[in-house]
Length: 142
Image (cartoon, rainbow, N blue to C red; front, side, top):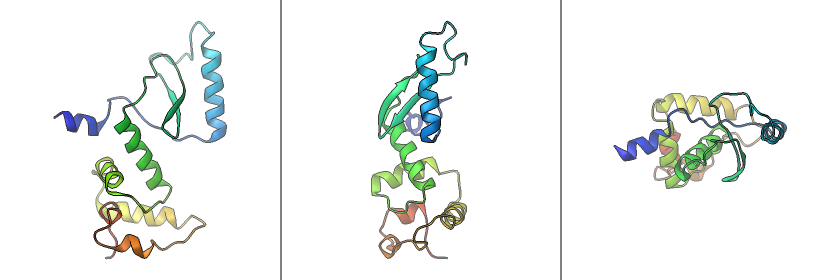
């Protein structure tokens, strides 16, 4: 039960990827809110800005995330960025996050997103090996 709770993450906690300009605006709002009587005016909502695993800034109540939740969010961001190379630990974390999506749907989504990129469109031959953890996340072949 404890492992499942950790895998699900904290209820009500979400990770959102933002652009550099959006992060700058959020950080500015956090600094202004420290001196405002109503804070950010978002009620019980709290936020924390992360970069490369470190908390850059946070609102009151923006508790640091568990290392595992941060790791899972990072692997999801890598998948969204069309990365296809995952070591075993990363693949397991990503599979737990994507477990409700059927493998065929994951593959189709990945192929569609990757087709929009200006990079090599074929998943490298090294990733095609059946023993590669990436093939668990993104099954190759038909």
